[in-house]
Image 1 (cartoon, rainbow, N blue to C red):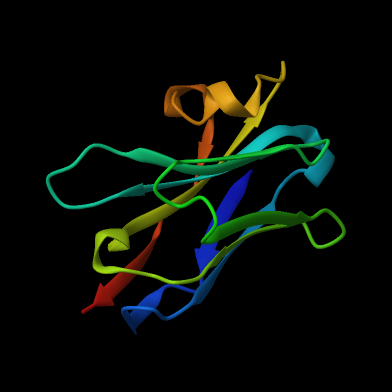
Image 2 (cartoon, one colour):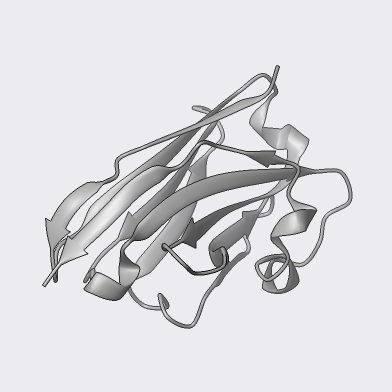
Length: 129
């Protein structure tokens, strides 16, 4: 059974940093064609934050470019999201997601969460001013 488990969320002050992790179990990391991070704030739709394919190509939402970095460690079957210069607008529940099957360009898939078949339960990030 495939499982994605996020960790690393918490409460920080504006300007602070957090690193989120997503541990994948149930299949080898190379079985996924793309993985991504999404977030959802109360009353808002889920939005793509960052995506990475199995060749290491990445894409980011404009709102996080230059501040967030997505990476993966295939040996550990773990996806990461390094978040720097956090601000209150980054407050949300953060989810990791994985897609198997035909690869979709990371610049496209970031805007189509329905293309990801597997999701974690989420980890809360709260940034105070």
